[in-house]
Length: 504
Image 1 (cartoon, helix red, strand yellow):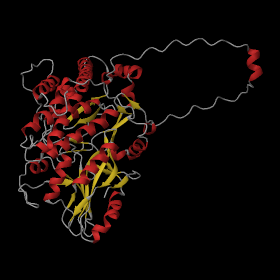
Image 2 (cartoon, rainbow, N blue to C red; image 1 turned 180 degrees about the vertical axis):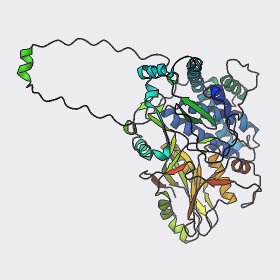
Image 3 (cartoon, rainbow, N blue to C red; image 1 turned 90 degrees about the horizontal axis):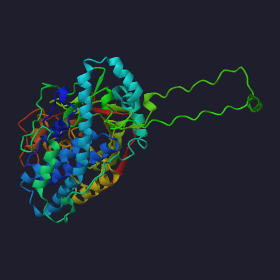
Image 4 (cartoon, one colour; image 1 turned 120 degrees about the horizontal axis):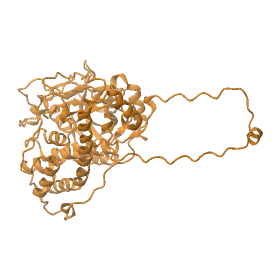
C-alpha cells in the first residue's frame, strides 16, 4: 500500500484520515473472495479499536471498508458471480449500517481538530507553562496518557495484556440508525450510487463541493526510509498511526474532545462539631504520628481506561520502506516450540503443517493470543487449508473476536525462506493489516526459523500485481521480504500466554 503522509498542520484533519483510508493497493487479479475476507479483517480490527476508544482508527478502518466495498469491488471481474452474490450483498449492507457511526465519528473528530487548530493559533503567544497549568487543572486525558517505547517497557506490555479484562471492556460504539438501503430485502440490489454520495459527503470537508476531487496529501514529510528506522519525535509529542498515515498527538489540552466540562461537584455539607467530652470518651489520644500516606501507584500498574483508550499506548517501533508506521506485535517466545510439537507427526513424514496466528489489540500494540491449526492437506512443499477447515477457522475467529495477524508453517526438509507460493499467501494477510507476519520453521536447517513480512514497496505491490499461475514461479523484482524481528516491529515477550486451538 502506498503510504499517505501529511504535514503537521493536517495531522488530525478528518478529511486527511479519509483520504488515507482511500489510498491502498487494489488489484483485480486477486480473487474477489480474498478481498471479501480482507473487508472482514477491517471490521474485526474496527471492533477492537472501538472498545478501546480509539475512534480515529475506527473512522479510518470503516472508511477504508466503505471504499473497498463500494468503489473497488464493483470493478472486479468476479463481482457479478452468482456464488458470491450473497457475500457481496452482506458486505454492502454492512456499509449501510456503518454510515450513522461514520457521521458521528466525523463530527467528533472535526470538533477535536478545531480545538487543535485553536491551540496552534494561540501557542505562539501563550507560554507553555500556562498550558501546563491548564492541563493539571482540567485535562485528565493528557495527564494519564503516556507514549511508551515497547522494547524498553516489556513489563508494562505484560501488565496490560494480563489486565485486559479491565481494559476496553466498555463498548463505546456510537448509536446506529439503519439507512433506507439496509431496510431492503437481503436479495435486493442496493443503490450503490446513493451509498457513494453518502460516503462522499463524509469525505469532503465543509469547503469542498460534492463534485470537487479529493485532495490526497503527498509524501511531503518523509522522503526516504529504510526499514526499520525508529522515529524520535520531540518530548512534547507522540506518534499514533492511522494505517498508512502518521498522526501527531501533542500534549495539549485541546486533545480532550469532551464537548462539555464535567459537572461541578456539589458543595460539601459542613461537619457537625461533636462535644470534646464525647470524642475523648471514644478515642484514646497519644503523641504517635499519623500513619504514612500510601505510595503512589506507578503508571505501569494504573490500568484504567480513558476517553481515548488505556493510560498508556505504545508508539510505532519500526516503519515500512515507504515510511508508514508499524505497530509493535508481541509474540510468545514459546510459540515456535509449541507449534513444532503440534506438527511433529507431519514433520517426520516430510509433510508441511500450517497454523494461523490471531490475537488482539491493546494500547496500540498487537498481542498474539491464539495459535489455530485448521483442517488442511499437506505435501512436502505445500500446505492448504481445506474448504471446511476455512469455514470452521473463520467461524472460530468471529466468535472469539480475534484479529488474524499472519501465519506459521514448517519446511520439514527445506531451508528457512519464503517461496513464491508463500509470498502470495503472506500478501493476503498483510494487505489490510500491514503488521501481519509469516513465520517459517525449518527444524532440520540453520537458521531454523524466521519471522518475515513483505517489503512495502516493492514486495507487497509486486505480489498483488503478479498474474503468474504456476504453483512455484520466479519474480523479477528482488527484495520482496525482510526480517520482522527486532529491530523490526516484532518483539518476543517473555510471559505472554497463548492458546493452541487444533481444529483438525
